Amino acid sequence: MLAWTLLLAQVLGLAGGSLVTVNRGLRVKKGQAAFLQEGDLQFDIPRHGDSCKVEVVANEPITQRVGKLTPECSVIKLGPKSLEVPEFYGLSDVLDGNVVSFRYERRSSLECSVQLGSQATPLPVHGQLVIGDPEEPTKRGDEPESFVPLRRQALCKREDCLKGLKLVKFTQVSCDDFLMMGVRYQHRTPPSPDMDYIYLRVDLRDTRSGSIYQSEQAWLPVRIAGAVPNQPPRPSFMATFILEVDQFILTPLSTATLCAEDDETPEQWLVFNVTQPPAEGFLTHLADHTRPISSFTWLDLNDMLIAYQPPNSSHAQRRNYEVSGDRGGPN
Image (tube, rainbow, N blue to C red; front, top):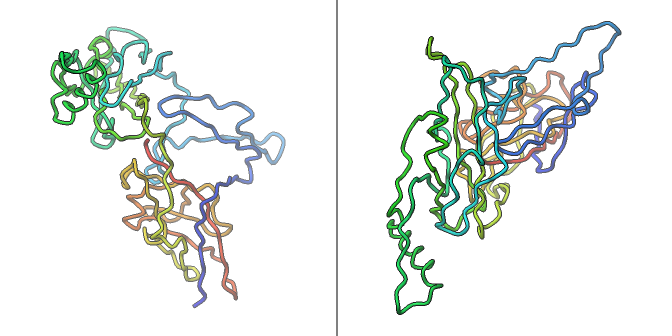
């Protein structure tokens, strides 16, 4: 039977549809929002008078989405001040209204609550959230003042740097109370990348019906001074990046074919983005193998749920197709 070869390259590219004349993409910082301008996305309407409707798939379980398009006003607003840890094992300033705020229509029947962390998003990775003020090590008469920070680091390695501090363990709290609690980020695991994130979810709940009126998530960045800049994931040297495919046969990919490594991110958090699809056929998810996908997770790849669907046309000779993509993680 005639065989096909799918080459998985590591270069960037762009893909467009027949009705799309301009698709420049949209760059958005993690935890923030950006507006889609007229010059970012343009369409070619075949005939004068034809109507054009653009539909945003809001709930797509197959394509791995890392954000959403919405005309609604954002509830979570990042303030002018960002969190920064001055040193390893250090404490950030208080997370207050200068760092993040919540904007919504305030009425008696609408309740705003904040949830920190989740099982699906175990952030922060390199620190913890605390309240209170730490007990500073007392200066000894027989040591220079520069030794005090070193002794503080030694205490933290023995789990003693929480004196005076309390771990934040609440699941939900009102939005106003959250900004008044004095929550801080404490760095805990050097060496680490120079960025970490605090995950929070804000729910606006109708107190009369108990239903959630609006829900929004955000990732608040925390800069760690003196840490190593975050590095992008790299291709795994164990993967072949070549997939042998028989004609017409839907063929799953595995981590032996495609894989990546990242020193700062667990494998199960990695996301692969397809920036240049194959010239014929398409990558798909086995939950619905009739639809192409533009990104997928390492977990689905490891479970062999990602596959290549060859074209329906036949060829007398072997053909090679190249797919390009990049890898990403939460840090």
